Structures are given as structure tokens and as C-alpha cells.
Length: 179
Image (cartoon, rainbow, N blue to C red; front, side):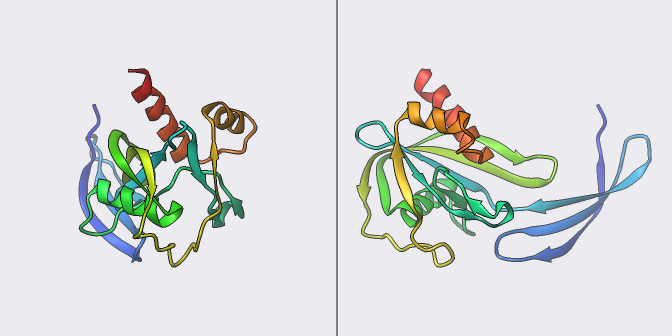
């Protein structure tokens, strides 16, 4: 197994959302290189399921794709928040709903070759309107809709759901409910 030894790490740029780093490293054969990557706080994803077993989706605008994207509510945790606290806050900010039942159903690395960030996926059941609802200052009130699992799968096949984090969260959801 090849192990890379970090020789130095330099912050190139940082903002409230991410840190851009360049590390100098040495491989086990003695050769050296540079690795460019982004560090982010943990990603918190909620699979909100309504009382009639439908998914609640949001439709944020994604700048890099220049279009809106149907997704599960998600976002980065804030400094000092646990992933569950971040997931609950994101769900409330993006949908106006909280969940009486909140269960961690899995975690995964977001993009291990380019981003140092872990995602935590929660299943939210028994949704209720939250008094703490304050739309995110950057996104405002997001369009949303509920869909059955069959419709969700149709949306995937039709290319209407393309967000990789939503797709990964759905796989963890399926694994959870089928176990």
C-alpha cells in the first residue's frame, strides 16, 4: 500500500463555506507532489418523509449548473454544531418543517479525491411545522414539493434529480428501510 506523507499544508483561500488548501507530500518511493483540495464542514442531509410516506423535496438554484435542482434538504453544519443539529437546522431553514423522529441512517465521503468533507444522512419522520422557521438569508424560501417514492424514481430516470448527494442519501434510505 502506498502511503503519502504530508510535508506541508498551506491555506490558499478561505471563506465561511470552505477552505482551499495545497499540501506538499512525499510518496513511499520518495517522489514528491502537490495536492489541491477543498476542506468543508460536515454536510448534513435530511430525507424528510411525510405522514403519507412521501418525500419532501426542495428546489434550490445551483449556480454552477445555472439551474434549479430537486434535492433533499441539505447544507453544511456550522462551527460548533453536531451533524444532527446541522441537519435539523437545514431542514427547518429549507422547508419550514422539523421532525419528531430523527434517525442517522448513514454517512459517506462527499468527493474523496477533491473535497475533504463527510456527509451525514438523517431520516426525518413525523414532520411538523416549525416555529423556528427562518428562510436562509442567501436562498430565501425555497420552492418545494412532495413526491411518492415511485415518482422520485421516475424523476431520477428522467434526469430531473441529478444531485449526487440526494442520490447517495436515497441509497442509504433504501438500505435503511429494507433492513
